[in-house]
Amino acid sequence: MKIRNLLIAAFVTIGVNAPAKEAKHHYFAQTSKSYQSKNDYGNNEAVGHYVNSKDTKIYYEIYGKGSPIVLLHGGLVGSPADMSELADKLREDRKVILVATRGHGRSQIGGVVPSFEQKADDVSAVLDDLGISRSDIIGFSDGAYTAYLFAKKYPQKVRNLIAIGAGVWEKGFVQGSRAEMKTFEDLKNLDKRYWNEQLDGVRPEPERILLWFEQVMEYYDSASVGEEVFKNVNARTLMIVGEKDANAPLDTVIAAYEMLPNAQLGIVPNAPHPVLLTDFDIVWPMISKFLSKQ
Image (cartoon, one colour):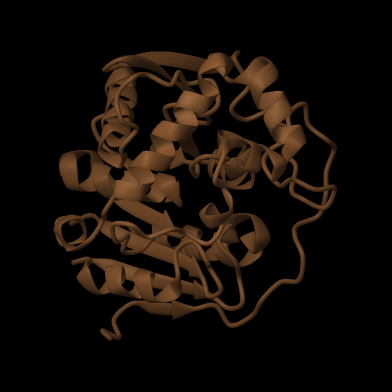
């Protein structure tokens, strides 16, 4: 294993961050102990915009001023609200662009395969709509794979890349949590409140949700992200992973790290896949330090 730029967090927080006032919308797996922003990220149409991208409309929100940074949430159950604590921190001195990836949140589903490459094209359309030529980008899980593809396809548009919970993805790999999701009902039963809200007022095409679910699952079954992608991501990159991540097992993240030309790796001991939510107090210093060294 290459030794350069390997970071290992030396401590672990127990539980999650302190609760705050309950917001209008519930994000996936949110509990009374979860972080809750006063900002209804992903559902604040006062700062929301739409851009046409290929066959659909992509929704995004902008907060703060300064150097731009794009935030990309996870797939299937993800939404911009997942990135709330990160957005609250970054917007203090950055222009934060929260994108709802196609089929998620207020973005439409479209008809093409929702591949990581297509979602990278959608991100490019958002930046073009804003007249932004270059940006930092942070992605979690599905959003991190989208960020890798974006950095590969649009290298001139990326300054720094942070990928959380995303390593080598071999064709046919079924992530830990996805193994339990045979049908949309299985997915819905994981958090009924979240899905009831999503299908009753958030997602613009609830009547197409089963088609969307099938599209995503079929794509995940056929997807592959490996050497051809990672060796062509030249952006300065920080990878973060929980030691116990079942969706992006540690060995797959280390394998991707070995392929990336300019990467650092942060491992959070004993942490699961949604490390940004469960261990933010460890993850945030990694992100802040990385971004401060341009």
